[in-house]
Image (tube, rainbow, N blue to C red):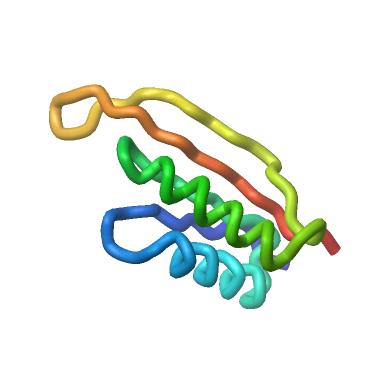
Length: 88
């Protein structure tokens, strides 16, 4: 299996769109998918993860979660990075 694919959750697209994208990345052979979102998109990231979990059940697990703050356009913004892994 390949390494990790990164999906940046933005305003355009629904949580279901991002969930489908993650599942497609797993089907391409990636063993891990990282969801990354800033500010208001964090809620959509969580919804996307829950949609993946609903579809894949116990075949997926959270490997890492990172919550923090970063500088973006000269201001502090919160972010969430969630790495999920497909189990054999």
